[in-house]
Amino acid sequence: MYLGLENGIALVTAASKGIGRATAERLANEGMTVVATSRSAGPTIEEHGQGRIVPLPHDLSDAATTATLVNQVVERFGRLDVMVLNTPGPRILPALDVDWQDWQAAHDLLLRPVVQLGTAAAKTMRRQGSGAIVLLSSTWVRQPALGGVLSSSYRSAASAFVKTLALELGGTGVRINQVMPGATGTDRMQGIVEMKSTTNGTTVDEEIAKVVKDIPTGRWGEASEIADAVAFLVSERSSFITGTALPVDGGAVRASH
Image 1 (spheres, rainbow, N blue to C red):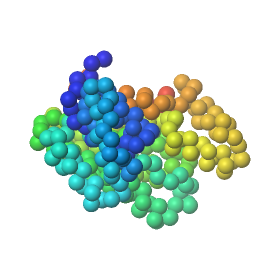
Image 2: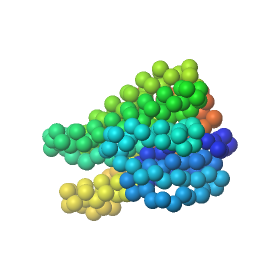
Image 3: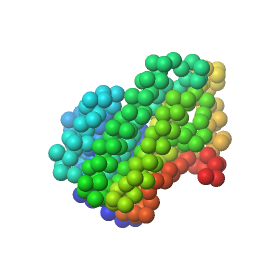
């Protein structure tokens, strides 16, 4: 399917691995110049198909530099066509074991960067009269999971923020959507099942089986499948879609709304 993304400029955060990395590669393969931020970003520009990935070292927990990211991209490339708001996962803890420092750290990891970058990108795109923003969220927003109180709480707040942006910018040429991944085979997911294995005295395979048994497709997702959904939502093919939250979870969340 032709997506019409070639020659566009994208900014993808937390893009060193997992879903963020897969998304950066997918957009670059469509011909975009993708500025990919991460704490471990190196100096090498990567060619991908007709596009490229331009690494930019950045720590989302640094509020001052996060506030400048969008301007850095616009100053260098002249515009911003796509913003992918991706954030790392916070600690997995029972709600009663979470202390206030954990809440503060999760706020600075999951919510504050989304508000900063989403606001800056939306203002830039409104001036341009075009652009697309996608928040990479989680199905835990709709269906919280044990140990996920930090993620589900702050991602729910981020979800409400971008939905409001979508309403306010509906007539400006700027579209704003969310992708909500379910269980996905990333390093973080592997770490979660390993932690549960240690806690429960089970094997990693047994913990994976517990996750997969609740997924109608019988497996967890791949990062590339999440990236495909993002690419569609930022493309011309989804020109009449804004303000939506798309689960990509193999049918695991069964809510009817």
